Amino acid sequence: MTGSRRETPRRAPWVIPAVLVACSSVSILSTDLYTPSLPHLPRLLASDAATVQLTLSLNLAAYAFAQLLHGPLADRFGRRRLLLVGMFGFVVTSLICAAAQTIGGLLAGRIAQGLFASVSSVVVILMIRELFDKKRAVRIMGYYGMAIGMAPAIGPLIGGYVYVLAGWRMNFVLLAGLAAGVFLLVRWLLPETGTKDRGAIQPRQILRGYLALLGRRAYLRYLIPLAMVFGAFFAFVTAGPFLLIDRLGVATEDYGLYYGLLILTFMAGSLTVTRLAGRASADRLVQGAISFSCLGSVVLVAPLLAGHESLAAILLGMMLLTFGMGLILASGPSCLLDAAGDGPAGSASALVGSLQLTAASLAGLLVGSFHDGSAWPLALTIAGFTAIGALGYVGLRPRS
Image (cartoon, rainbow, N blue to C red; front, side, top):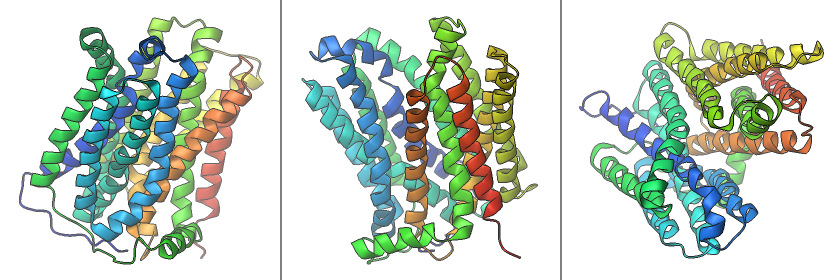
């Protein structure tokens, strides 16, 4: 692996993990903070709802694609340096979004913002693994999972008040201010990690690195369930509002409560990892995550096979899934980077992030394409994704 673990500088033990978590939290807020403003933007920017929704989807696409570039860049120029560039670019592009006078200007700003926001999703995992021993790295990833679970839950709440008090542009000004603060913390408090590889950004080496990872059984064994469980959850993100509100009669204003319940179970899974790190191996935690996720899919499908469609069964199934997602997103990356062996660490981290977003997009496409008003498209999509994740983990176990 191109990165090598270094001694943690003599600071309070929570300082570096807190800065790393702050980096990712600010990046994730860029997706959720301004969503309460979306219904108002067609009128304010002389556009239409479909075009305004592109400010979300194109941002996500840029976020996913850019990770494949950031991995090799992190191996070439160093983790801290790339993180500083990413945060500085995030500040600038957030201000561009705030200043946009047309929907075209906002779309351009959002695409550029996604390119820079995705730096932290690659670099933070690398730095956690390289700065700390495996036991502490798994524990820190548990707290990291809790933080990234809270960001999408509180983002729309804050963004709604910001819109009412100061308008939609102030959401992006707030993001710029938060990112500027994180930039300073990274500059002052984070050390550099990894060994710079001068050939890491050569196109042939980038391609060879990714192909080598995709041909590595041990790496794929964790890559597949990490991507599939993440994608399964996004099937609910896409179909959940239609199913709960239109089909099962949940009041629109109450939907956030049910979604918040799933975020809480996700955070509970992440917290469980922090408690079990050192007593259970990361691989054993991944096994538990896959078991909970598969059990959740069974709870979703079984009542439908019996002819019953209930809110309670859907919520229970999703809670089991999100608990498993909390487990695997906290314990899986450490196993994944170890399984990459001597391969490029940046590419190993980037590939999983990009494929997770690809799986999320595919899951959303599937439940949308087969939407019939019932819970079947959601249940079957989740069952299929979790089954692929479990088969990948079991089928690619080390040969004796």
